[in-house]
Length: 490
Ligand code: HEM
Image (cartoon, rainbow, N blue to C red; front, top):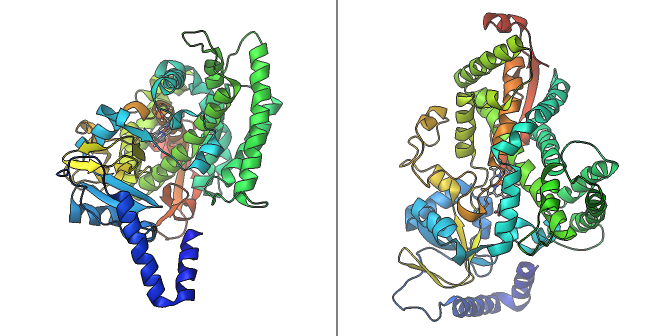
């Protein structure tokens, strides 16, 4: 709104007053942004702050983000300043500087999100906090997603896969949409455990209404997607409280992350409050499903475009399937530990697609970083994608080559799940659900991209255009026989 106000004022009063307005704004911003109270000889990083107020926002959103970052990196080096969405920012693309911000001096850089997102997810969710409350939540969330806790959910996740896959057969699917449904069902299972109370069905519906407004402009006016999402969020809170109440009253608070959160007591034996529990349940569902769905969509694209990799993955999975058939049992956690090549495909997809291009932090005080000043209040963005696409760490970075992960990457150069105190507690669950889906998909089905439209859409993460339409078919029986696999799963 401020931008349009600025422009219309300029037109009303003529070009010269527009010029005057802009130059006054520049001087005002300059005064605001001048670093105060720190050594004169510590300079700000190089870079351009772009236009007053809008900074370089339009450039970031109209250029390919890769080009935006790499042009500036070439011009200014690994640490540069810019101005995005009304905020002065420092972008960093060196692993060492990213480590300082995310790990070794993480206490000087707090996580930061737009207030509208905080309202939608819930202000007491883990993402928005530092210090003791954050550590307590982190321990609880992590304990819920450690391998020891996940072992038991393999068969439940497999059931979800076996329910979804047949519905894709002989149809053209929107891969992203289907992967979202899958990842959402897994997220609900992880949040609430098995079972399907009536309330859980209600929560699913309400969550979808909330989601629709998540990336909308935060105009809280009747009829706007934002207002609808906020209404759904309120109802979601009420329904969640009913579930919490029920679980608190029952002897066992078992089931998923909810059970863990309800069972927790701090040193003074205080339980988490209902709103703390509710915000963190919504938060985890939110963090768990669009991310995993976008990565799965990319995996199917890369396997389609690299038939030799698909064949190698299929062969690995068929060996495991053959053993399962011989033993007459279900897929187990131990089977998933034998999927070395498939795991490297996941690792390489996380690197190549880098769906979280960067994260945001804010300097809580003036900080000196590798000879540059980061003034208090400035945003700091470690650029995961730039680091993942740097040829010094990943030769031929644009090539999809899972074999590069036969040796571990250099420390701090590979951060698809972040690094340090706020790193992702759900990484093992995400990898597990991808492995289980790929096991059944590669052994039973084949897929072909419909249309020849290459390109990327953002929704909100980068994914192939139109959500990657795929035609799915059951593999020919002869192919299974050729590979020695006698019967198909399902
Ligand atoms: C492939 C899928 C996923 C990717 C790429 C991913 C990536 C990330 C990244 C990069 C961060 C750190 C953000 C930062 O430092 O600001 C993060 C945090 C987080 N992720 Fe994930 N994530 C994925 C799946 C999941 C799943 C399945 C869950 C749920 C179990 C989850 C729960 C969380 C939570 C709760 C945080 C916040 C942690 C904190 O603030 O301490 N994520 N994720």
